[in-house]
Image (cartoon, rainbow, N blue to C red; front, side, top):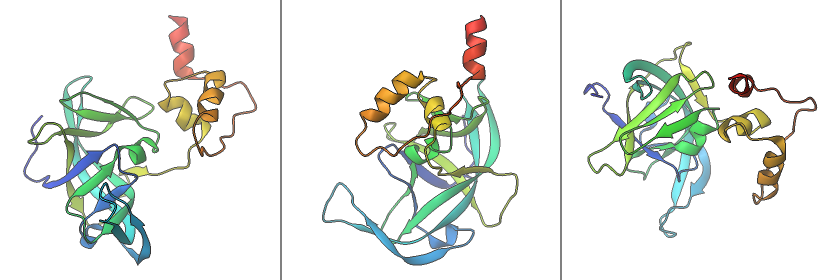
Length: 202
């Protein structure tokens, strides 16, 4: 997979980050300035203060590890927080997964797929190999057909999909053993999953 120098904005894919962060206010399509909160880092004395947040539109290449193809895509990232003292772009794995995507990866790449198994976003190792990055070009105007990678509230469908189609019984057990877990509403009818149904046919 080879990237053009056109995609010069490098987002560090971070499984420990709670949300996305940018180091430039000019990246936003529009901006909501304010003093919102602070973010605690591994250094308890080095707090990062959030002063704005909004949507960032990016163009990027997507590598599909299933068939080895590469395509160009456009995605909307929301919310992205601006922190004046941060030095790198951070892309939160957790936040992307809340967009009802699933991740598959290894040391060579990580790719996020939607419910239809379409590749939506991919990351590749940087020079140190241990950290994967998503290379993008920041777009300054809105595009209607871009993929929305906006954070969503957790619901039954999202958990069911990301937990690899577990049963309701197992889901109840998992939720009961997560500290401070928000309440999830289970469907009153028997949940029928097309993928599970097709799998049982074969």
